Each structure stands twice: as structure tokens, then as C-alpha cells.
Length: 290
Image 1 (cartoon, rainbow, N blue to C red):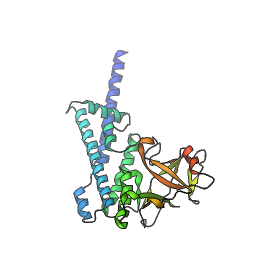
Image 2: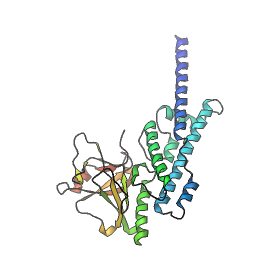
Image 3: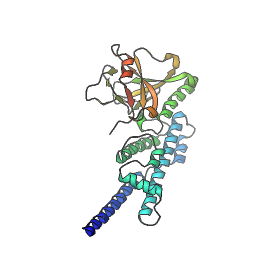
Image 4: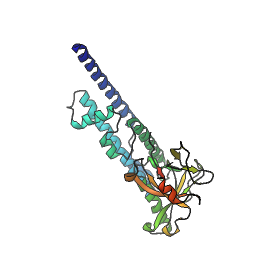
């Protein structure tokens, strides 16, 4: 039985190597176009470089850095598998992560908080790249609706909203806050008159009544409820709405705590005071469990 066992082991090893080669080849094919010409984009902007444009450029730069690392490490692993390079500890870690369908640590460090498995993560990365690519066609005009969950740094986009308002109204930035007005629809026909439209949020622990425009108790199977488009705008802190409003924490992932982004103002009916939603652990998420 020993010879057959040894043969099976060798066959399994060969199959695993072939699988890794296919995974690496697919990854390289997917990310080969993930590179933005930053100099070209800056030239398109001309002198119209404001808070939103700065956010966009930083997002493109971070995408370039992440894509470059993915390509570098995968090509290095290919060379190691071909015997052109000696397998290092970092290459072995990358190989193991890919085999287990996990996002490699180094990629995660350069990316954003996420609980996704490898291929779901790549699908999400592709959507992020598509949003930036569409934005790059007209870099001086923000998207009609920005998928805030597809940004490396969503806080910077919210800051840009306040900076743009501060410049327009000659207000002090530290005296402004973000006001969130939930629209009763999932599509819009034009840009927001004030601030910016965002999407990509899910409410956990409750549901949003689109017609009534307020929070409600969720059903037994309502785990994550997609939120309609939200208008984020900057207002003076003293004008912030407090009555009939729940300051809902927004997180990047279901891990919550360390992925906090900001607090969104959501309307709640008199029979459901804000304290109810606090006790229920209600929050908004940018990424749900797969």
C-alpha cells in the first residue's frame, strides 16, 4: 500500500500546485487594468481641484498601490513555483492564503476593513475600481450617487462635503456636522442641490419604511435591510436635528467597533424612541456578512 499512498500524495500535491497556478493567473488577469494615470487625471482637472477632487485622487492612488502589490506578489509567487526564485516565508503565506480562499494579510493592510472571502473580496474590488474608472472620465464632477461603501476612506468623502460647504458659505469647518436625509427612492435623476447623494448602506436590527421615511421594527427574517439613497449635507452644529431622530452609528463591517465611520441621523416615530434602537443594537453597515 505504501507505493500507492505515495503516488496519491504526489498527485494531490501536483493538483494543489496546478490550482494555485490557476488562481494566480486569474488574479493577474483581473487586476492588470487596475492602474490610473494620476498625472493625466490631474491634467484633466486643471485649476478646478477642490475637496472632492483631492479625495478622488487619493482613492485612485490607493487603488494603484494595492493593485501594484497584488501583481508584484503574484508574479513573485509564479516565479517561485517555476523554480526561478527560492520560496520565501512571505511567498508561502501568500500561497496558503490563496489556497484557503483568504485575503492575504499584506493585501488587507493596503486595502480596507473587510470580512469577505477571497473571491467575494475581488468582486468587491472590481466594483470599487469601476466607480473610480467612471469618475475618472469627468474628474471635476462627482458621481450623481456615490457608493460610499466602495471608497477606501469614506470619512474623507464626508469631510469633503463639509469642506465644500465651508468654502461656499465661508463657515468654520469645526462648526459643521453632516446631516443625513434619507430619500424615498433608490434612484435619482440629478445631482444633489446641497451636499452629495450616497448609497451602499444596510440597516441591521431594524428596517427602513420607505413610504413613511422612518425606522421600524424588522421582521423575523429581516437581517440586513438596504437603505435608499441618502443626501449627506453639511449644516451648522446648532441646527442639527435632535427631536424624533436616532443617531445611528455607521460601520464598515459587521465587526463594528474598530470600523466606525460616522453617525447618521435617522427619523424614528414617537412610539419608537431612540433609546429603543440603542438597546436593540441598530446600526448601518457598509458591508454585510456573505
